Length: 585
Image (cartoon, rainbow, N blue to C red; front, side):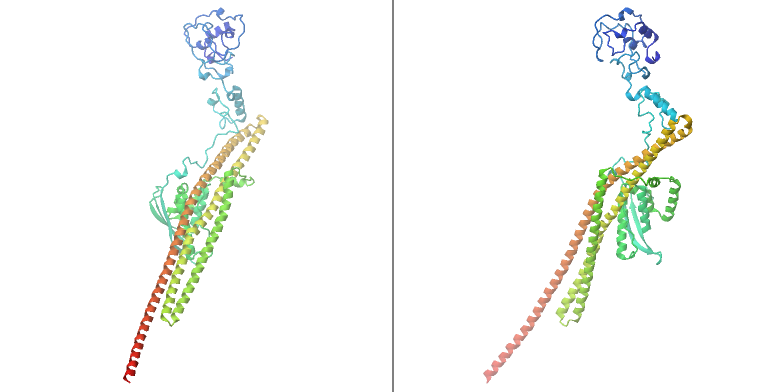
């Protein structure tokens, strides 16, 4: 039995209970209520003696126990006299039945006197303390002394190897939707391609001009020179710095014909589209490597310095190291969402490649048609110069000029097909590769997590084995206990990283779908407008040539009519002279 001070009553009230051991068993006093002396003993300034006969058991017939909410009748209650009542705060050490072994407390008791829960029984607390002492992990994983002595200590707050303290993930989750995040404006252009170097080390550099309202940059407008490999470096760093983000990819490297005018223009346009997409992304535009790429005047030196800093501050075994160490772990997709996206990605990539091949065929045929039209025009021009008839020669020369203009229209249409439909389709073919890279980042995060889980299981097995050996391995047990807590923290951290990459990927897929619709809508509208303008110019050219032919025919008819009129007058004059001669004879 607990001490008097623990249960909130003084010695007088306690002696009074001892003098009447059966006072609480009166049939008219409910067993579910704490007796009145317990309520008022600690706060009464003076106690009047209680007559024993008032609480003596009466030989009456047994009744059913009263419900917890029932109250004794006024006649059966003891008159408290001038005592003051006070609620009693029960201690857990008294047991679940209260300090006197009675039933539940009455409604007059304070809410703080509620019974202890199943998870906070004193026996469980003692067991937890023994396990903490055995593992010597009081400072790392066990609850504090203050937490252990709280009566309502729950099982979640006690030491548990399967429930370590949650770790904060390295990648901070975004609580604000990416589309709603305020971002500065960027106006980026790539132009002025220049060939630099000799035959063995020649390359093309581009001028990257930037206008921005971002306060992260030193000045709002600047320009730098960058080559193709600098764009590749930026792409790699954005992928490594932002796992799960679909990074816009640069055009593929080409060894043959890389200095052709058409190829240089196509690459310049693709590089510009890449930077514009990166700047419009709510996450990538804040990347420090992107900032370095846009404004650094000494880019190569800054990159080498930054790589040295990363090598010095990086851990010996980071994300990729954990992935390589878990190379034997097989990734099995559990989320149907990502399984459907993978299947959809394969189908879309195949269809885009087929469409890109078809567009290349159309462009090639347009260029071939333009070349054939040019040869046809040159042949007509040569024929018109050898024709003796002036009208026919002029008509052939006009047709030759028309064919040269049609040849230019075909070439322009082929170039428009490349800049509109062709570049957009190739861009999304490259984006399919970026999506695969983002999905692989999720797989790497899963493998790292599973590898950490396997290591944690092994350490738990080692700790359990040492615990069964008794106290002979206390030093090693303490060391393994520290390692176990650290492994639990890392495992929980890797799990959170895997979940964060999955959430980010779902957001990226939503963004990708919206941008895809907008980009293809724009490119198809531009493609149709270009085709309509080209056909209008072609129709105007043919109408102009037909008008020229009509004018030539009219002039020819007028000249023929004039010659016929002169001949008729001469014939009439001759006939009149003959008649005069006959008359004279």
